[in-house]
Length: 256
Image 1 (cartoon, one colour):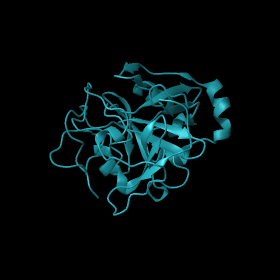
Image 2 (cartoon, one colour; image 1 turned 120 degrees about the vertical axis):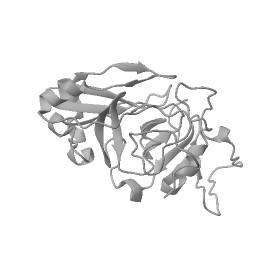
Image 3 (cartoon, helix red, strand yellow; image 1 turned 135 degrees about the vertical axis):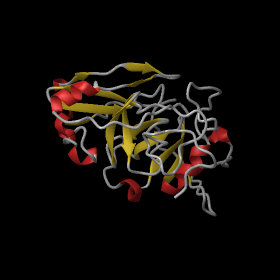
């Protein structure tokens, strides 16, 4: 893992033509899609390359020097100003911590596996990995505000990418419509404190986030709960499943 570099190879699957904008061929084996792992506490039981075909209809894969293959959703899928764990979904409390319930049928993958990071030239990109978490984010809380930041891929320093909102709006649907301006981030960093229990993962950690009882007390609102969830150990969830309800399913990956 290394610093951001602008030279990329582009790849779309499911089409007759592969656009390769750099020298050299493009092998389609699993090693092409980020670092491979041999075991995990919650593996998908598929090579990481499975994400290639699942996500290709909804975005573009890029091969970044020193980083590997990453994926970016198409603007028509996520809308302008897309921010992971904010756009097109809501936060709900689960047995494992706060989890992002995405409105997108493909949300089960990039909001529970892998990591998101922000780049100056390309915007938000998703790095694939096969370890599950309710959400790969860090949290801040205090003085009536809540904030979260996607955790970068292991070994990558991407700077601060915090998102903040009023705690009163935290449990509302479509959290992306309630975000506070980016110009207030530094002010809100001073007004909030780190919060949440860190859960050790294979590489790094995830954060359970603020206690649901505290959220209910501060907001005076009922906290939305996910269905009882068990981290998947075999297959991705069925196409009809919400992203916050990963469970084993038979057959191939979700389709439109």
